[in-house]
Length: 392
Image (tube, rainbow, N blue to C red):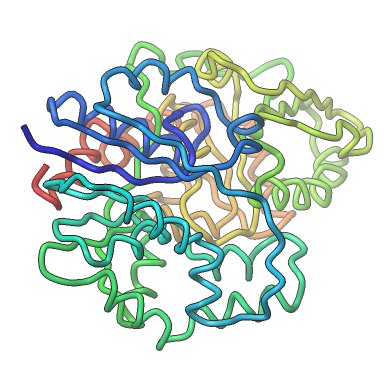
């Protein structure tokens, strides 16, 4: 029986997005193949308490050979360090290396998610390294980050630093992948050979897809995602500029739902004519709520990673409106065919008015969204393509 070591961040939780989805579907597939799987999760108690649910992990943990949680202590980094050393600090490489040294088992295959584990596994063979969103991109395009923090982040993106990572991660029987083509292109141009693979989101069966479309009554828009994330905070910034304009130009009533853990301050917005805002918090049966939406929005100018919240909506056939920056991580999507893209407030307002007044466009986007999702972002297809890279 093949022995697999899986190293990641977070917890297996498809309701959490990002690493939670990757962890859940890859581990589930490895278990289905009857491999002997040991899983190691780097996280902290605050994240597990406030941003994740153990429900899905509880369903699979007894099928793992073993699992371990490594707690990352919250600490202030007072070092004025830059370049590769700073990158190692922010990804907890030292902690990962110390933990791997304690492991006595020789595994047939090593799979890692996040750069910290990938660097820590540099001396191992048969390694698949799945890289998350680049640190420098998250900080440079982040929300109210300090100048010093941005300078330190930029230092980690210099060519000689990325080339050094390439020496650690690339090699015979080693594969490095990322889900965003723009990040793959940057890595490769700087000396870290990285393959692009399509991302995936939660699978919903065809009978759950949106069937009813709205030509009368309130037009329901949904923002999906924890409001503490960078993308969500930038979404809020964009919406603060947009809702007043939308309220003055649209004749139809709008209901804007915020769905996600820790909605936080419920006075994020002023009261607007024709627009009612509701905070729903975390919802277990997300699909049932989403298919009642007329549109899901992700309008942050944030050209980092992939917007899982869009893919979740598209898998259910819910029309989406997104900032054009989302297309860098989801280059497969076509404007006016699969999704409506916008570049600024005025384009966003025009798209909402257009979609709310054209039921045929709603149906077209719904149909094409599910079709494109099924072709490009279906976990039942894409997870195996990932594992194929390391012969699992």
